[in-house]
Length: 80
Image 1 (cartoon, one colour):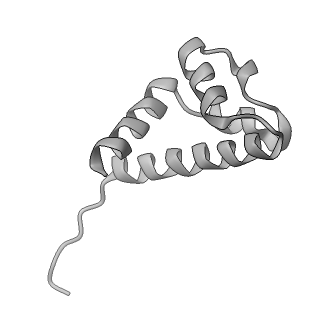
Image 2: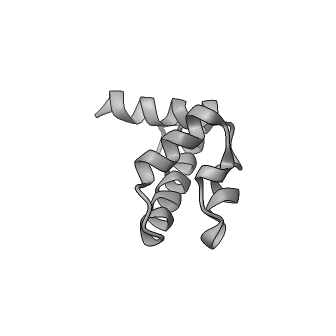
């Protein structure tokens, strides 16, 4: 127990963003939408109308800056 743990707020932040994006994707699926198309449409245009209001999906995704969402997605893709 002598080792000091280092807290990485970026890692926590990325995990939180990823969790919310997955929640939004599941909600979009439930509504019959293709979540990839809808999320990409939102990220490219900035128009939150691409994301359903069902179960507060729109407010969940607009809680984050689009750049942060893209950064999280790219990091996850490159780390796999």
